[in-house]
Image: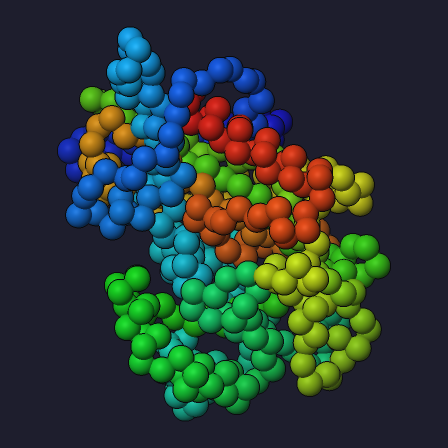
Length: 384
């Protein structure tokens, strides 16, 4: 079954050491045990930016005598396994490098430079035709086709634009350049070492709707855990099955499929930063979506299996970037959306995503889910 099947592949690095990566479609650690005293120390000093920006650090220390502490285990969220998926434009390139962009794991996308001119837009977007889902039939395409234009480094629903033609695309790009200015480019270069590209992506249409015609997407979590021995470097990918449903604030309306001048953000943004413009619940609490959980988990496992060449290469290159006593891991928040026909699409992967606070208006059940998730992550790291 999809909940127990494990697919493993091995590849050789340049020094002939094998790397084993296992795709486990559904694993949730639920056992508990008392852990030694722990703290979150500063990451070890290093010239590596990954070490300076480490997340999810967990050092386990054990008392020896009355005052002495001995380091037992050190786990840092600095694995490079998901580096090729973190930025929106890199995710598109990674799908292209792995030659799976035609398999429809993600919506069709076009990359645009931040300084793309109107003429270049017209040349790139052939005949002014915006990207649409390959599975969308002629009857399902609305009178006015919308595409989703995503700003570089945008988060939590900000920087998402719904566009209908080349002129609107260029207007958004030009307004962004004038608003952000050269300081934005300097900041991005310092942060990324490059200037990320805009994404023009097909809209998920028609999307599956719930709760009186509201759009939603699923946030699920994949954790990559590296273990290193003298002979090999192994990476296991774990899919957590406490899936989250993130719902738009307002329902869609019939006029959304007609020649309207714009998309209503409250009805089409499912990950808004404002508490008033979002709802978060668990997939397990929604009877109308329970039947889709197996297909969701199979889809994610299949997608990451296809991404193994990129994951393998990045892990091999970074295998010896830090001291041997540090076990590396990384958490990926994977966002997926489903069409009305039940087909899943991967929208983006957020590396080491933020955890919402109590002030975000979360239900008691959702808060309990987050606490359990953090406990399960800690258990997974300290027993893997």
